Image (cartoon, rainbow, N blue to C red):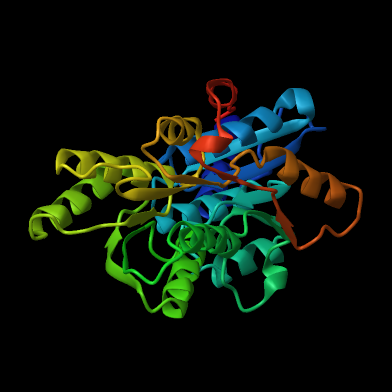
Length: 328
C-alpha cells in the first residue's frame, strides 16, 4: 500500500509540473552541442528555400550544433509561438526571419529576460529598443532598389514617359519596404515616370500571375508598359507568364522586367532576354550567421548589421556556364 501511495504522489507531481509549463532544456545526446532555435518565414519562394538550405548546411551536429527548425507558414503568430517554444526549451540562440517588421517587442523582451540572444536574418524587426536583438544579417533592400532605379534611369535617358507597373512583396516586410521606398523616391524625382499601378504579389508566382492577369485584362487594348518592377524573382515569373499570355513581348525591346534575388531561374530568363535586369539578393546567409554566433561564443559583441555583397545582372553579364554554376 505504501509503495502505491508514493508512486501515486510521484505521478501527480510529474503531471503538475507538465501543467505549469515547466520545461527543461531540450534533451541532446551531446551536451557540447550549441542549440539553435530557428524560425523561418516559410517556403514561399526559391530564395526562401535556398536560405533555409544554407542554414541547415551550416548548423549541423558535425559542426557542433543542434538545429531546431520551425516553418511559420507565412504567419507571424506562428513565429511568435515558435519563439516562446524555444524559450521554454532553453535554446542557446534564436535565429528569426521576421515576416513583417512590427509586432516583436513583447516576445523579444521575453527572450532577453531568458538571456537568449536573438539574431535577425534577412528582414528586420522595428522595435523600440534595438538591444532586443543581438545582430542582423541580410541585405540592404533600399540600396538594392536604388540600384534598380538607377538602371531604369540609364535605360530610359530621355524625357519620354516611362510607364511602370510595380508589383510588391509581402506588405510590411523589410524587403518590400526598402524596395518600394527606392522606387517611389526615384519616381518622385523623375516627373516623366508614371507608376501605372502598385499590385500586391506577396512574393509568390501564383498570386502575381492572378493580379497581373486581372490588371492586364482591364487595360485598354495596346496599353503601353515600359517596366514591371518585381520585388522578387517569383513575382517576376508570374508577371512574365501573365504578360506573354496577354501578348506583351518581354525584353529590352518590349516590357522590361526587373527582378530581385537573381536565383538560377531568373538568371536563365535574363540570359534568354525575357528579364531585363536581375538584382542580386544573396540567400546564402548561414556562414554569416555562424560568424555572429561564434563571436558571441567567444565573449565578444558582434557588429549590429552584417550586409552581404551583391551585384546586378543583365543579359550581357551572363553565360550559360555562369547560370548553371549558380548555387541557388
